[in-house]
Length: 114
Length: 113
Image (cartoon, chains in turn brown, orange):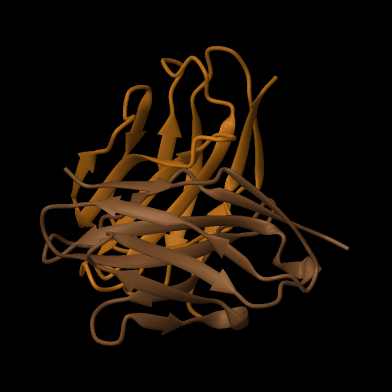
């Protein structure tokens, strides 16, 4: 069975500092990887996805993520955060050739302080 | 613009009452999903449907029911059997291909009166 672990439930950071949100997954078969962002009282919005090819994926709002197959990780990074990046971030995987069902991590709450 | 519409945004339920949450999509997606979100627990899958007139239980289906009579619509009923219904409910849809993301509505917050 597949699983997703987000290693930090909360990440406080000061404005303009870099941030990394960590995601590890477990799967015996090939997966696709996604990061979503959720602002308070809203639905989830896709930040970026890794399907194949280059292991460094760029997304919206200046975020990027790196796929590391040997470490089964897909960490999300931003070199300089803004107050507006305060939100909850979810890592998710789907299994190759098994439809669109997603397995989500527990979420990481990013809090950007001035 | 194409998207997913959930209604109402806020809903209150009395003890012993069934309530229905609406989810409509105009993305022409085959698959639709319902999730429950509680603080600190991420998203938990309640039901999903890959095609009209068919649906499958997710991880926490007890106390919930769904129907999929039309491609565009996937309503969720929270029955009186669901003893702890207070949560944020999210509907999503996708093309049902594993390399395509799910698209989400803005959610319905259900509370007990």
